[in-house]
Image (cartoon, rainbow, N blue to C red; front, side, top):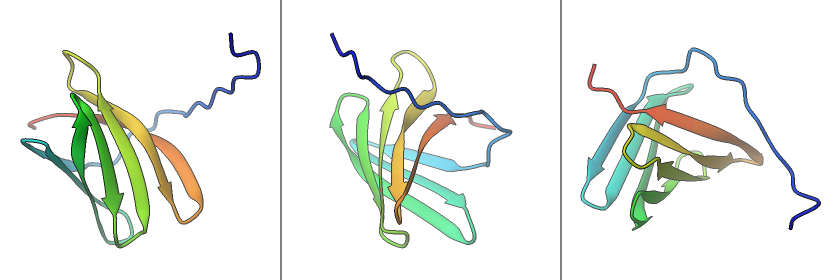
Length: 91
């Protein structure tokens, strides 16, 4: 039992557009945030990815929810951190 656990939540907004490329064990997430932002990484276990962004000195994780088009995870950039959720879409 974990009696001192902590929950962190976020409020969904309209979300920004992004592009996700999955190629074998590699993943690339790109989007605009005061200029182009590129997170690249590797699959470390089935559906679990570790990513980094050199330009922003960021690190992140993404986990694909089985049998869905949803990726969720956590990111850290320059002392700030947050959660992200990506819905994979073709259009």
